[in-house]
Length: 326
Ligand SMILES: Nc1ncnc2c1ncn2[C@@H]1O[C@H](COP(=O)(O)OP(=O)(O)OP(=O)(O)O)[C@@H](O)[C@H]1O
Ligand SMILES: [Mg+2]
Image 1 (cartoon, helix red, strand yellow):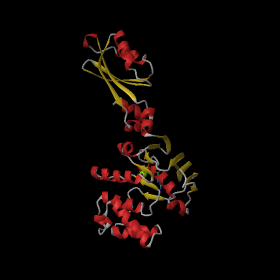
Image 2: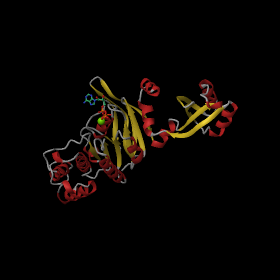
Image 3: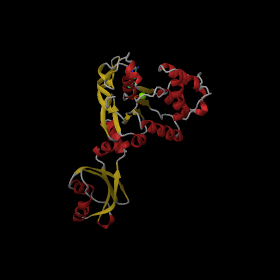
Image 4: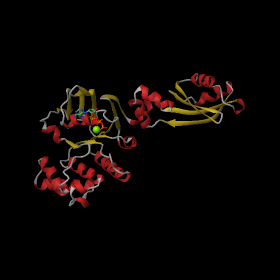
């Protein structure tokens, strides 16, 4: 098996005249767990359907294990386990029956099918619901059954479309642990709106916005690239009064390595500023403040979260400005 499990090459997808994906390219290596992020309608599900062969790209191509995905390509489909959005399951089927059905769909039969069934039942923790109708299951158990059908043929690749959506916090923790366990031996792409999930589970993040890929990196690098060294600084003037804001801004902007200084609120005769820099400015800060009769009332390092990075990358300019004025 090749090291490069998935290659999406210059893929575009049109629905009628609407372009849902524009020239998207990325690769996933064996053993990676990739978090696929984007606002509603960004094109996550569409991309996943291109990889699984449920949809054909309007332009570009997808390779799975070096082979091009086409509607008929059973070879690439056999390598993939797919948990679609809102796992469409047969509500009137019993869980046990449904797993038999899923095994048959994957051309498994006899003792081999039985063995795989036993394994996925154990891995997904659904021993207790085998005799229940799928329609009567809680959302968390539906998701487990969805995962069980996705891995019944022991595929090396898993494509999971919002596997934790709609689950309660306990169920989320359970499913996340399950995904992490599966990730020990499989290549996984999972889409989610839960950013801490990505930071906790994934070694890579791909962010898509309005059909365009806007980021592809490790969670740490992404946060770093947005200017992670944010310092929250509060200043006052001599005598404990509100400082001259223009002057304070100029002093901060003159520090070595400054990228951006954002004035924030005024509170209790102090003005707050957020300072982003390419290097640590703390060693020079006090000297500059003293020379300009400014008093340091507060200083703290503010670590940018993946959530903020995501918002920077996916909110358009106007929305982002409106946000900052709040
Ligand atoms: N069958 C379709 N026909 C027409 N437009 C579609 C179709 N499927 C998706 N779209 C549109 O394509 C865009 C991308 O949809 P997609 O489902 O891929 O987004 P998504 O990132 O998965 O969103 P969500 O987070 O809401 O699941 C959306 O604007 C959607 O309305
Ligand atoms: Mg979707």
